[in-house]
Image (cartoon, rainbow, N blue to C red; front, side, top):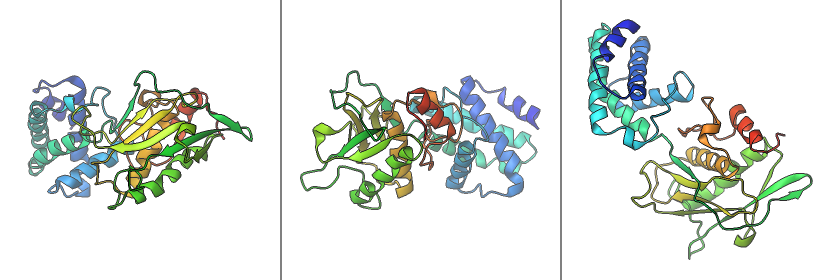
Length: 289
């Protein structure tokens, strides 16, 4: 079966990493036919692929990390390649899934790098991370609008729902590291400013948040959410905050190579650091509990 799929894909000229990605997708679709997934629904194809990725059944190529990688020309080639492979597999009734699968590839691209951990040069100076009872304390401040509402995305219709999930997300790190996280109402005393704005065209549409790469001591880092993002669930938002806080601690996507980790480039509903994330944190100087 693999040789048939290999032969089908050899006809298409695509960047190597992207070709490998769509080939693995075709192989998975053929392999799971016995489970009779509902391939008539693009959302189901997308959910299946997301689950396979998050569970580590196959990895994304290192070069498939930007919307620039998935232009219409690539998707057209992917559709043709997947369709040919599925027909060649002896299951021509699956050929109709090719178009849906190309759509799923495009959907998966919205999951790539949906945060924007970034080095913006020199963040403004801020307080040192102080020690209390032998543990460093990272202090955060949440910006409010003129009506006293937190400047956060509306989760389930309200930014207050997002507000209620912030502490849970940050404490997920506190439970695994010798670290405490505390909120302040004094902006000048914060190591991390949490806020929101509507991202403009200078920010990729797939990005949910922009966070300065830490460490936070002596600098005032920013974690900014896209206020135009209204489709997140409480769990997804909490997972995003936890991921972003990892960046504030100094962890980059490239620091975590294992799959199914909080700090992987593709965000999921993983909302607490796992072994690979904690090793990355330890490499950045944070002590494990």
